[in-house]
Length: 88
Image (cartoon, rainbow, N blue to C red; front, top):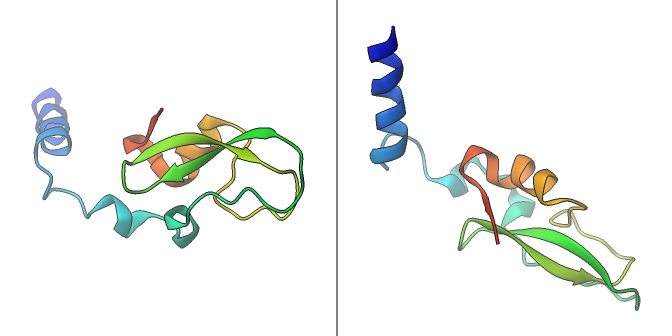
């Protein structure tokens, strides 16, 4: 069983063809750019940048939020990055 787990681990980490592309598994809103909104608050939020496959910060105005807008980096990674997401 240990050898089988090592095989799957090696496939996941070394063979990009083993899994479908990350974009194929993402909800559509994860592909959208960050949106500040039309209000004037300056709240730090996280968005998923599909190009770099990272969760990054942006300034949110406080209203008119879209779905690629997360309170925490962990929420961003869980929703859009999954196990392959990272932080910047």
